[in-house]
Image (cartoon, rainbow, N blue to C red; front, side, top):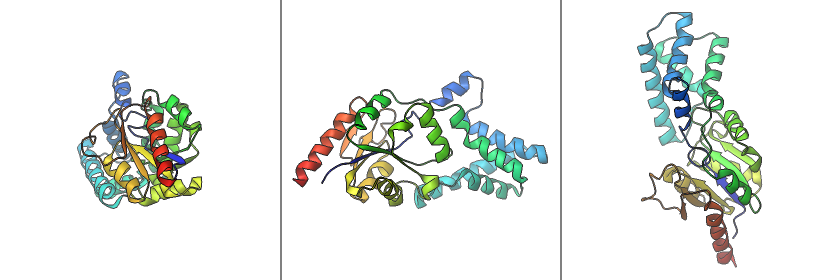
Length: 257
């Protein structure tokens, strides 16, 4: 037995989820939640007047449906699918060009004002990449995989990764096995040769464990699951992560000897 790959969640593992909200507020911009609803209202209202409250209710209802499908069926609707649910609920349509613009504007919000990288993440990735192949295995939620790659590129982190498994591209979200299978296939390794790092016990620990991989619960910005995790290790800093991964790799080697 050996560990050849370190797989990373993105949100609250590589970048600090919602750290962009402070930047938006400082610039006098709406929160992401409010801006998404405003964009949908604006697109519809320009075609035919509609009350903002109606659009907000339809958006909230669609988000509730998204969360149900995400948590129970392990599927992330794409932004296009989410918009179609909203439009259907309102009994409205948008011409192709306007719908495409709405989808693009919504998808790019976190690219244009990205969340901050977590402290010491680049040094951690640089050190780990010397001994392991690295990949990203992450739910996309609102920003699609194309945008998430741009966020990583903008922070100078994308170069450390050899593979990417994003839920909008895979067709399922964590903890579904296909997310981790996609990463393993791209890198030509077996499932048990992966250790996954992420902040959510259900997705980032139970998911890998179900396919025979190891898991590290990362708690630097989101420690919510720390007291109930079944992770092989808990890590609260990127400074400590290379040492944690090295220890797990050594333990795996010893067991296989």
